[in-house]
Image 1: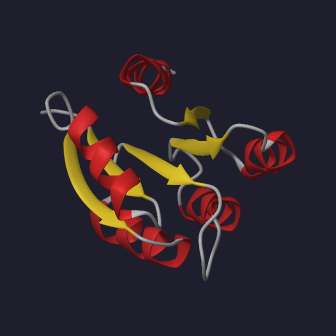
Image 2 (image 1 turned 60 degrees about the horizontal axis):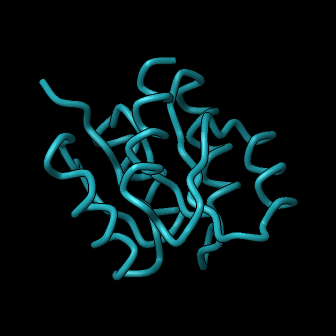
Length: 120
């Protein structure tokens, strides 16, 4: 069975881009537009990996990552961050992020982040 991925980003364009990059080799188990939805979908579907945007309305990726890690300490979360968000990235790692990929997404870097986290 292929690895199940939950895609979390408030941008439809970014979710679409990630889906296009991943759907050939990964099973997309759902998409969320904010951190609160991400936590709910995580509980419902138990994905293998979460691709989590940092900056989102309602509940940002850092808070959502912390909440998911509290539910499941073995959860694997890859943060999606824009260039220049070093401080937010440090907070994300502190919240339990297992890896990160920088926007704008490039297919090789997204695949490498997933491979690295899946192997860990």
